[in-house]
Image (cartoon, rainbow, N blue to C red; front, side, top):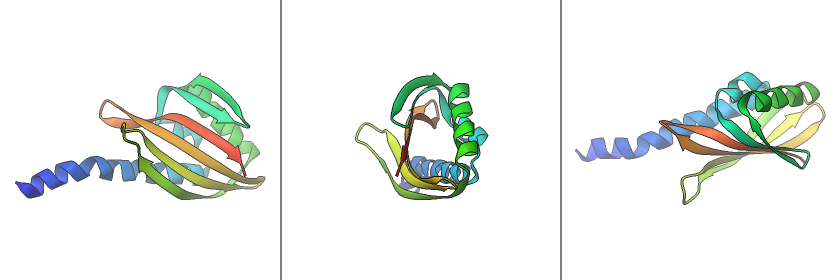
Length: 124
């Protein structure tokens, strides 16, 4: 019984680790479509200091455009965690053909999965 309880407690963290891995891979490959699959219906999108509240398809298109302008070379996850109110986040450095960017993503639970609620892209 204790083993089952331990697995049930650890399972959400295993799913989240997979999400972080998928996000890291998508940013490494400049794959806006894969990131788009993990976006909520509307998100807060920040690029070049400009904050916007936009829909999933607009965010995916903005990311696609960003990746065309800044061809990714690699992505390194710097930090991940969970806030006290169950907001998951991942911070990473994206190395591109035109410089380095800090990517911060916040994910909230929606149904049985965590979806991206916010993406911040900052030039380093």
